[in-house]
Image 1: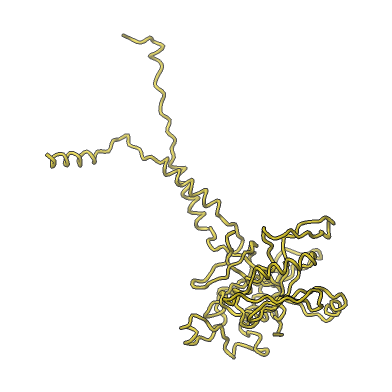
Image 2: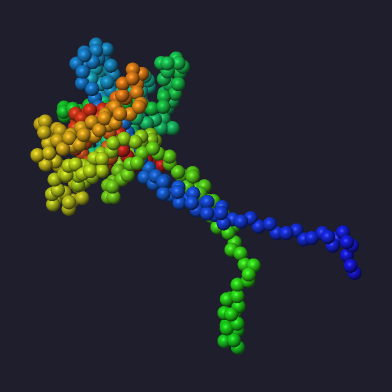
Length: 181
Length: 191
């Protein structure tokens, strides 16, 4: 039995096939480019300015009596102190394996920051035999605020608005860099 | 019988229909997943710092990006600045055997009471002069029309076993060559 003419005209839908080859080429090119330019070495940095020596500045500082928070890394302990005795000197014993007790040091520095929220400077005094690894670990404890740390509120000098401090002591200077041990 | 069947199968396998098309959809899926992963973990950094094989960098929680600057690398064997080996450390049998490098300088490499590393000072001074010359020729000017001042930033990449005594001499030398800011490089700790 023949179909009606209208039914005969209706042809089967043609299969549409997208040509994926150019898209594939583009993807492979992009992946190659990304892999070539990708930085597999994830580096970060801790900034430290060179301490400036100026007699006029020293005289001014002596008058103002700043906190000048100092962290001295000794062989067996870490001493947190201020040359103007604005804080009570604290000795933090190293752990049994000889490494710095970073947690206690961090807690001690947080307590000081809470007392002096506008203070940003810290002076680090390592020993000759202190390793670079220890220095970076102490710098981490002194600079960064963790998410679990208590909130420290600082008044923004420009806007006058109370803000949450993002760093603990962001400016680290090596105290004995220019010769004194 | 089994022999005949295997022959038939082998013949059958050779036949490729003319309308055969490679299924690229699954390959596309894989490539897209790889692309998304790469884009997600792609670190946009402006520096070209690299590490030296065998050097162990300390790990830091700091998340600061490292801007491009002059790089000084302290390996157990030598100090490299601007891709050139400037000073070599004294190598002793003990230090090589004990896996604890000495990082000791030769006496002739030091001056100013053993604090300044002479060859490194020369290399840093040369780099500073070159940078200042480039700034003089550059069209970038400050508000008064003077060339931009030398920024004096030095990135230091050192093995984690390096002692502060060595680092201090390096920073003292850099300070003498008018480098005022040090970027101590470390491996970023994944948070």
